[in-house]
Image (cartoon, rainbow, N blue to C red):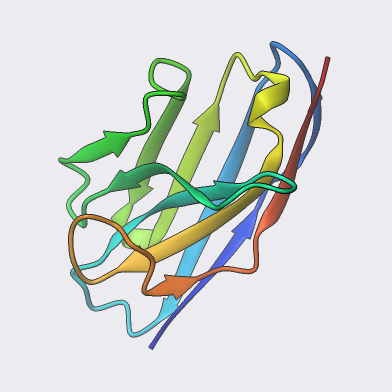
Length: 119
């Protein structure tokens, strides 16, 4: 069992930046793909980004390419999502997820953290 926990959400103006963190604990002997999904109010949960166990492979949704960057600290079992040039449409609850396979589908989920981008 892997437990993941997010942190770092908040309120930011359009054009601003936020960094989310996700720490994995429990059976983190890997390999695990980790990444993020998001769910806006009244919408379905959607894939945002994923990173491989080694950090050598990443996958981004088209809507965030060039603005969001995922990275991984293997020693700390932590992934980071740097979000720049934020838009109001990025407003959502962001969920960290971990999976034993690629692509990331979400075998293990965090509780979510709210990101709100004001216009």
